[in-house]
Amino acid sequence: MSPLVTVKHDLAPGPVDVVLRHPISGAVAGHWRFAGGGRTLGVDVLGDAATMCRVDGALADDASLDDGFIAWPRLTFEVNGVPLEVVSRDPEVLRRHYARPHHQEESYAPGPPDPYMLAFHRARIAQAQRLLRGVG
Image 1 (spheres, rainbow, N blue to C red):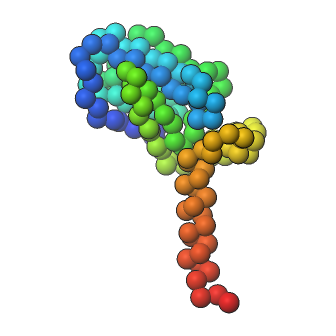
Image 2: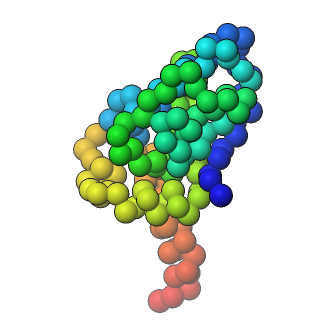
Image 3: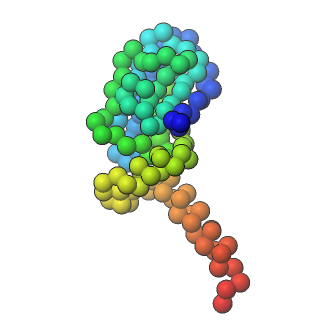
């Protein structure tokens, strides 16, 4: 089963423009245009250029995705210019994310810290503290 995230989102009437930003560089990694508009955005984070984004179940009129793009567990899409964060806990998304070439170099790149990595490490530290509570 594909990790489809359906986002109930009141879209203004008219065309829908969806942009995917790379989690580290912020560069455009994907772009989808839906000339007919719609009300519900569906995101399949393991999809390809044609299937990653759908509006009301329909494929985009125009779609692009960087070659070899590997989804991160937390992605930011801009829907008609408004940022929308999509989070997936699907095991396949996590497996692909951590198996990517140069995972460590990208995740810990210089610059502003990745919010996902900060949250991940905070959760790991909290779990370790719970497990070690009372240990001398």
